[in-house]
Structure formats: C-alpha cells, structure tokens
Amino acid sequence: MTVGSLDHVLVLADDIEATREFYCRAVGLCVGERPPLEFPGYWLYAGTDGEGACLHIAERSSYAAHAAGLGLRVPERDPGVGPVDHVAFRAGDYRGVVERLERCGVAAVTNAVPGGPRQVFIEDPNGVRVEISVRDATVPR
Image 1 (cartoon, rainbow, N blue to C red):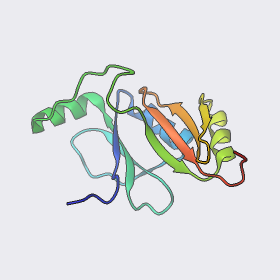
Image 2 (image 1 turned 90 degrees about the vertical axis):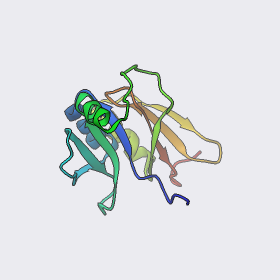
Image 3 (image 1 turned 60 degrees about the vertical axis):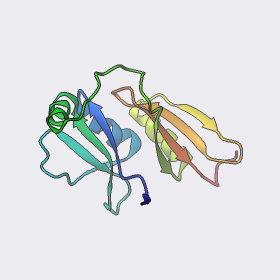
C-alpha cells in the first residue's frame, strides 16, 4: 500500500471563529462543505475547484470528548510544544501573499531558500506555525 497525497491537517482551536477568520483572511482559504460531525468546526478549502478540504478546524474540548469515545487521546494544550513544527501551503504570488498579510495585520518572518522558494512564516491564533511557500519567477532571488 502507498499513499497518494496529504489529505488534510486538523487544527484544534479554543476559538474556532477566530481560527476560521485567520485562515480565510490571512491565508486565503475558503469555508466549504463539512459533514454533520459530532463536534463544532469548519472544513477549509484551497483554490476554486473545491475538490478537497485541506484544513479542518475543530473545537478542542468537543473534539477531545468525541475522540475519547473512539479510544483516541488528545493531549492537553501546551503552546509551542509538539511533534509538528509547521503546516505549509503553496502559493504563486509572493507580493500578493505579503500584501494580504500586511492588510490583515499578521506579522511574518520571511526566508529565501537558495535556488528554491521564498518562504513566509506566520502563526495562527492557536500557536500553529504556518508556512506559505512561494515559487514566483517575477521576484528576484
């Protein structure tokens, strides 16, 4: 068995509305269809094709109760500590990404990988580090 691609990432949030707002306004994702799950949340989609949700948001305490019923443990929130360093999205317009973040008042750290993409790092309202990786031929390296 092999896998074909990453399906989605789940972000646990104490405030799902602020988290949804961040990913929609700052990152450019769109709220889309979500099945009637047993806990509050959102499924966010990238692009305009609506083919697959790439980021799921779940209300932390409700999700933890649901997961416990399945026999899954959800660790307590410990900001800044975890096995995953960041979640990355791909974009094609560096200036557009930077301007969007500035309009939203989101602080960013940038990095240019030699011979590779330009990276923009931001942090969501839950302390999740997010990278937006841009391969934009119009921006000098």
